[in-house]
Image (cartoon, rainbow, N blue to C red; front, top):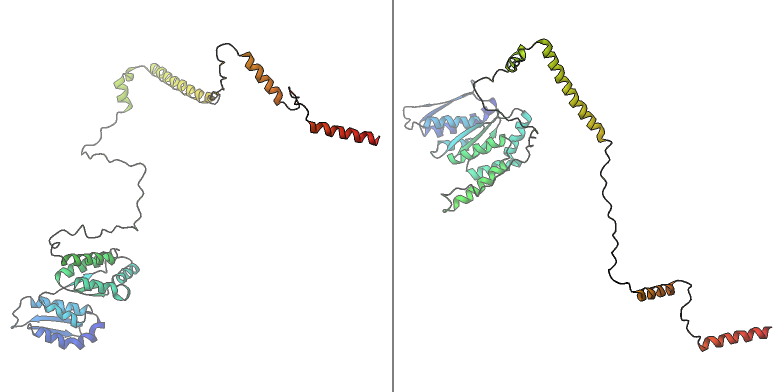
Length: 327
């Protein structure tokens, strides 16, 4: 298998370990640094038919910058690998780099959380993501990686994985549906498409073409106008035109007359005086009211003036005595 030159130094260093690990299952590996390729082949002592497939996966992982300590786990029976290609999922290179960095997280925290929840080793290198672990974990890793490249943040999938891990510990809920416990995230950043005011309703599809519209000659033949003389036709047309003109004139006249029609005024509500009570008038009561009104007027002398008191008479006498003494 042809590989990049930046891995040559590491592969040359760890190749004796690769030969030792594959020698246990009787697989012969070979490294060609001049050609830049790695190959594996069976020997006469090879007894496991699936060993060659595992050896192929081993050199694939080594080529994708997976360290030998992790890659050698592929030779175990309960371990598999998955190499996910993410290079062609996003057109813009800048966007691709941002989403790949989002998968790794700050200081590799997102990738570490994904590894702990899935029991898999995940390696992001170039345009591929290499995963190594149990089959159930590889399935979840692939889902998270593909969703992240489709602009869905990995934190949502990590939350669901955490909830699933807690639910799996409960023996009663192990055989039940977990959808009611899992969170449902909605897209908030997608702008809603404005719906048109006039929605065109599509007609039902029919294989037959629409009926051909009738020509003027066909219409005249149907009404019988085709067989009339030209003078009669002209007269009939003129009558139709005059009728149309008359209707248009009446409409215009009505519109003009609308401006001269006065608006309807609201009737004023007059205060209705109370009707006098039926019966004889009480003259004595009216006289008393008149007398009281006269007394209330300003400057009017009282009808029964009060008699002068002794104090007022003494004051008047003193004043008259003083006037005489001055004289």
